[in-house]
Length: 56
Image (cartoon, rainbow, N blue to C red; front, side):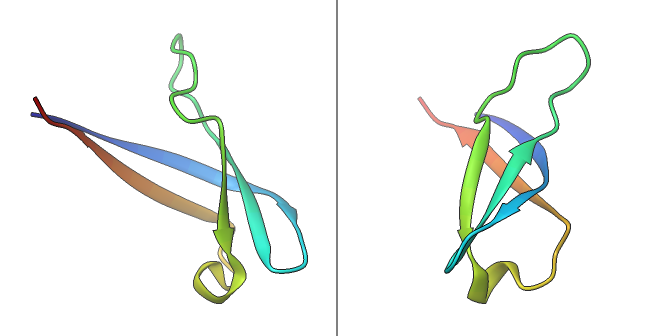
């Protein structure tokens, strides 16, 4: 099992959600690109982290 943590920064706020853009690691393409998070969870966060785990 492989785990990786991806950092996202605030890109745009919509009516009920916030769009975050992935900060890709140097020399690597983005894994997820952009994600939407509901405002009730994101709050005033400027950055978020998501941890992905690959399972066989």
